[in-house]
Image (tube, rainbow, N blue to C red; front, side):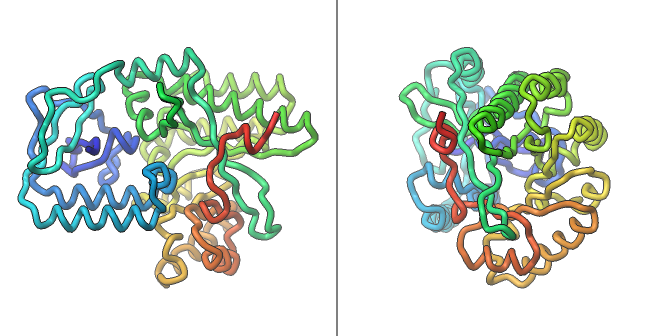
Length: 367
């Protein structure tokens, strides 16, 4: 079962809730996913939907690993499912997920239970996670391609489930935004990052951390004062803190994004534009953004050795970034051949499973 919904603006089927989408990936307009208490609409074109899911899976290495298969095997499995669905007759129906108040896609001819998931709603679980410190962090390394050494890490949010399972943010961030709980989550992650850097420096180790901010961070009035206060309290070099936000979130709220980025850079922090190349206005947004790093979406990286178009596009991104004094990071780096090409193309950093998988911060930065 896969959570999803239909964009009210362009009528495109999306994977909103499960994949943490806050905006339509086609028209980029704001979307609020609400359940249909009458049972939901019928999906007439379920093949387009499954292709959307496949594209998402291709871009999400961590989620593929959690599903228990290597990324390539998982992609092959989803492809087989798509082919099987293509031979089946529609419809696939969307229905409310009861307590979670989200949509669920049921495959054709499946038995549809009246209610799925008893127990607390996601809103309750998120509140409990904030109160009981059930959130924790993993970190994934970034390789400096010129120095050939790990020089920084990206922090990745996780939540502990009842049975001790690891819950990925794609399962709860969309609900956190709907329930206005995303702001305290953003602040918690930033606070943890600053104090991890401070503790590392006390132990004689320089550390630079990248922190993902939500698309709602621009409206978080307490975020900037928190960063100012904790930087002053810990005395860490502000440049060790890199705030990261997706390109689509920036484009959707460009004016507020510019204001927040300018304020953070005035403090001395650095800023990264994530998933660069995933939107239709990538270079236009770059023209107006005072960022330090471009994180090139994995869509252009995975097939780099075999795709000349991807090579030309990455080269163009690197050249434009350099012209703006911006460094580039390649995401989803899966093998050494890609690393070699990235060096040739002038990319500064590489990130992906070939460089290192996300691990709990307690394993990477032992106390």
